[in-house]
Length: 326
Image (cartoon, rainbow, N blue to C red; front, side):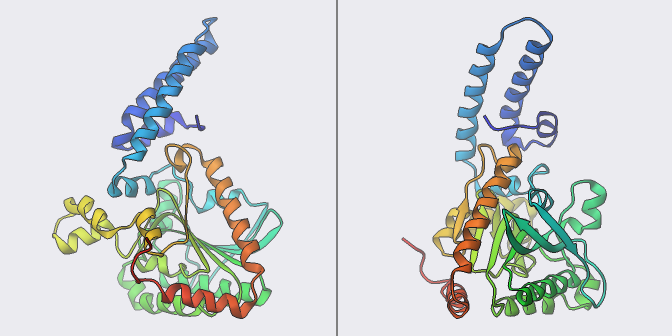
């Protein structure tokens, strides 16, 4: 059974997880009792663990798109900062040289298993204070300008770019619009097509709207099993179509925002399997799987000639929207 965080998961558990969390609490209580007494409870603990594993598989096999959206937003889900912590080295780079440094986008030089690359990712923050400072991962235009400036630096250095997408959308405030939010995102999309180095995009949680697309053009686009990638959030879609946020589950179903549908339509290249019960139940294993995929794709893309790389990137996005793969 994967490593769990009992006190946190019980507090932050989702509605459909409650039976699983209650069973985990019983296992924790028995383990604690076994440690503080001379009782041999291994048989009972192993039986409960097997039952928990079986029930977890059944629950997560039947998740609806709306429930997957909730998993993607789980408070304990690994964030960009958790993946950065698994790198051998990371040097953060700040600012857009025009207005300010946007904390909702983190950029920097990273090393993973000897491979050097430029990391660009949405930053949500863990504590309430950090989340407010980062606007819950909703970047301002200066965040996207910072991202583009650092990606161009990567091009000059001849190193790959890896982006971590995790945002409900770009910041929608008046100030962001006054400073050219739409223009900044559009310029990023345009110029990422022309960068002469490999680009890897990973949707690790929420992939919402233009906020995601602003760092979402890549030679390889992957997403985690319980993340989502969509033109709009389910709540936003429900508010527009039905004038009610209560229709968010129906919107999530209609948007086809989960991995299997996106893979079928060619919008992503691969869906990376998460540990049993979601990435939040075993963040170490999830960071290892993501690291494996980053290294695999970097090695694959760096072997391609530059002109072939750019043409394949163009054709990849040009062919999106064609009839789904069978």
